[in-house]
Structure formats: C-alpha cells, structure tokens
Length: 420
Image 1 (cartoon, rainbow, N blue to C red):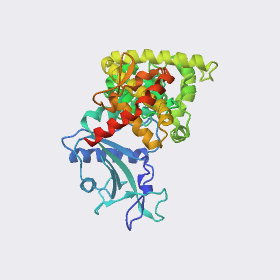
Image 2: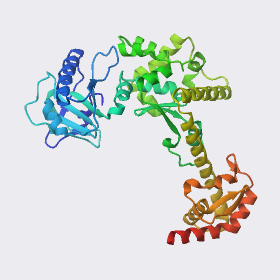
Image 3: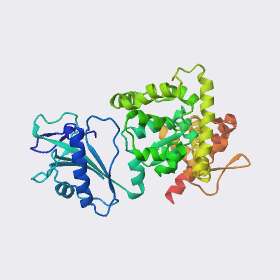
Image 4: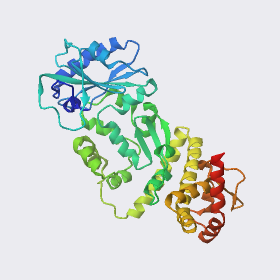
C-alpha cells in the first residue's frame, strides 16, 4: 500500500492514523526489530523482508513475507508485535506500529478501509510506521519473494515480455497463446477466459531468470543503484536491439498504464530513457506497421517454441491449444448461427438462445454433414464448428436449409431431455 493504508481507513471513535514516510535510519531499525519479532512469532516458518529498490531516500512501509498456508488471528498477531492498529485482507495484514520500535501499551484497534477516499478529519497525535505482513503459501514463497522485490521489477519484466506472448503474474510466468489474444481482439463477443489460453511455465525464480538470460548471481548480490538494476534488466535476452527499437509502439498506452507510470516513474525511466541510451536504439515510430506486426508474430512464435522446450511444456501447450481453438470456433459458430435461427423461428432472443443451445447439444457431423444425434453431448463437445471455414460459415445457404428443417426437432429433444 506504500504506507497509505491507514490514511484511508477508520475505526469507530478513533482518529486517522498518521503514517508518514520513514527515513532510511528508521526503516532499518524497524526492519530489524520486526524481523526478529516475526521470527519469534513464526518459529517454524521462513520470514524475510522484500528487497527494496536502490537509492530510495524514504520508505512508505516495510514489507515482510512469511511462508505459511495457515491463517493467523490478526488481533493476536498485532498484539504480539506491539501494534497500535491493524488492517487485514485474507493473508495480508497491515500494522501501524510505534516509530521508535517499542511495543504499543494498549490493545490494538481494528481499522477498516473507507469506501470513499476521504479520511476522518481528526488525525492522531502520535505518528506510526506501517508494516505489511504477507502470508504466502510455501510453494509460492520463492516466487513471491522474487516477483514483489525491488519495487517495480515485476512490472518492468511484465512489459518486456508481454509483446512476445508471455505474462508475469503473482502465480508465476505464463505463456499466452496467440489465439487468446486474437479472441480478445475479435469483433465477436467471445466468452474466453485467460485461464483457457494461459499456459503455466514456472514459478521457480532461478529457472525463469535462466530462461530470460538474467544473471542470478548479480540478482542475489543486490543492486547499489538504479543504474545497476536497469543494467541487469537490460541483459534480458528477449531485449534484442530490433525489438527494443520499437518496443514503445506496442507497450500498452492506456490511462491506467499512464497513471501507473506517473506514480512509478522507474518504469517509464527504464523504457524511455535507459534502453534508448544504453542499447543504442531509439524507441521510434513504426515506419511500416504491417511489417512490424509480421516480425513480432514471427519472433513471438520463436520464443514460444523455445519456452515450451525449455520448460518441457510442449504436450500441455498442444492440449490447451486444441481446446481453446475448439471453444473459439464453437462460439463463433454460435454467433453466426443465431441470426439464421432467428430468421427461421421468428421468436424472441431468449427462445433463439434456447434453440442454439439445443443445436449445440444435439447436432453432430459425419463426413462433414450435420445430423441429429441419438444422444446429446455437453456444450464443450459441440460440433457446430464443422460448419465453419476459418471464422465464416463455409456454406451459409446449406446451413440455413438445415436449420430451417431441423431447429424444431432439436428444440423438442432438448426440452424432453430436461424433463427426464
């Protein structure tokens, strides 16, 4: 929360707590103090502080991560650590603690986040420091420690790899199928979830860094300056000069992205200042967008093939791709069939939807020809995609004739099946 959690939280009869940014001296003192207390409280768990970005002159909060798959009582935790107040969201607990490291003498107060951004007018006389305690499942502990360290590491890495078909999440590094991106850009409103087209590669930080060409030894030693941090990131082997040259063209230019970069200038500085200056290529406008898109698609395919080989995911990729393509094709067929059903039935939209659903379950194909099945199958097993040639109907007239002659039978079978 960057130290701002209690500025937008309230408790009945209590003031808004002041949690100003900490000097490096206060930060280090409290970090060591609460690291010791947390290790005493969690004697059998791994407890760490997240690595901070270098060259910071002040700190909003102190981030602690604990490997645990068991919940804790936030009141008990806050009391044991000597906090004045606490906020809790599932496995994340934010505490307001005395800035001198002493234990607060009174029972901690539970605060809740305000639904509006307006805090209570009355401010506390005392100042506090905010510490964040994140309970992370043991199997995700190493990844979370990597993903959440150095402030903007995950955001910068995410933008580096995104255009090449990868996504960095709090669960690990994923391969994003091209068909998923195409489905989201499709004019047809397809109900495709990210889960259907995101292949998990790894949540082992060492393995991911090896694939990306990032030096593990340098990462573990830490960075004394932002320049060192940027230099390490710029060695990512995906950042070839030709890719860097036009990276800005495909970076997400949305209001959310601009707002994020305004609040986190380190991200913008890396892409717009460091890379052009040190890779030796300007982030220029695209002279030939079509050629760039073709080159990017080719490069994306190359990295996909390398990734599934490196992470040993080729079989999983093929299985996921087959299911995704089938789902996209069936939904496209549904979309194209609906107006034909509507024209033949002439009923309301709800009835049209019912008929299309019945066809999805009762229509099969043999030697390319549709037929009504003896038994229905599930929506996921729909065969309506056999009517397609790419993303259009192969023979609209033939489809229209078949639907005209058979929609009523499909509807009756589905209704009868539901009764049974």
